[in-house]
Amino acid sequence: MKFNLSQSRVIPKSVARCLMLLALSGLQGCFSPMALDRAVIEYDKATTDVLSKQLLLNIARAHQHQPLHFTGVSNIAATFNFQFNAGATPAFTGENGALMTPVFGGTLSENPTISIVPIEGEEFTRRLLTPFQEKKLTMLLRQGADVDLILRLLAGELRINGGNKVSVYLNEPSAAEDFRLFRQAVLHLSSIQDRNKLYVEPLMFDRQWTLPAESFTPEQLASLQKDFKVEYQAERQQVVLSQRVIGRILLTNYDPASLSNEERSRLHEEADKGADNDVSVDIRPGYPGGEWPIHGVFRLRSFYNVLNFIGQSISDKPEFAVAKHPQSPDVRENPVTTLALTVTEDEPDNADLSVKFGGRFYALQPESGYQWNREGFRLLYQIFQMTITDLAKQGAPGITISK
Image (cartoon, rainbow, N blue to C red):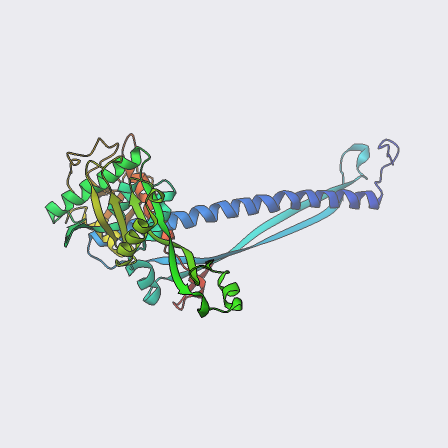
């Protein structure tokens, strides 16, 4: 239907109503996605920034010998209220003064509710004081992280097996000789990784049991086939049961699958005698990096000890330069400090992230070329995320902030 404005001065109510509804729909369709998009992005930025600052703040606390403490965001719930109003008013111009002109508007309000939970009690013990297990280090290595950066952060010591003697080398700058050999061993693994020859694989092997055939009924043999490979040897009247076992993780310069089943089983039994936070390493001659054979375990420490190590290295126990082992090839990166921080009286101008604690500002030290410090802090962030459990279900008292 068409209206000639020169012939008709009044738009029918039905048409005016349609125009207003169309305008309202357009406003609502415009504001809702824009508000949601902005809220999701801004909340994501805020939570990431808060956790990054908490990590830096706790390093500052460790530097100043203060207790460490974390608070986790367990829930963010935002309610958006969209209100629209519309009406019509005559146009007060010329001959068209009797025309009905639609008038519309809208308001948008946001009411976020953020719940935060202090990490304390049993949760504090589990997340911060419990040493990392080997599977978490393996997960990081399989994501392509630098083995030297990971071990400098997470490993507290290297235990080398030499027959009946076990030599322990601490990742502790105050124990200079221990620290030097620990760093050299980590650099050696890094040189193998640089050549894409470092294997991080579980030891898989078969276990077998030989039993008299008369010990089983046909029903029992059928049931065993769910979990075992069953081989019946009629001439000997015996049953051989075999089962594939996925054992401990091993850092090697060779493919563990190339070993015999007996050798893989032996290495697993040796590794299984250690703790859950022990990561076995077996660097053998005849393979890349075999110029310096290493057989032992890296013992991982807790996140609490990781932060203390970084904080104390600022001034109390500074790290020092360590040259590679004479039998190691050149490595790409060998910075003096695991995570270099600047501590200043005034707020730094060129820092992406800084916190103030105890009258001093802490920030990552800027660098050129390979961003070792940025990668180290990113890895620290990821390691902390790997300790997270469901905060909302913990018994710690929560704090809810409603804006």
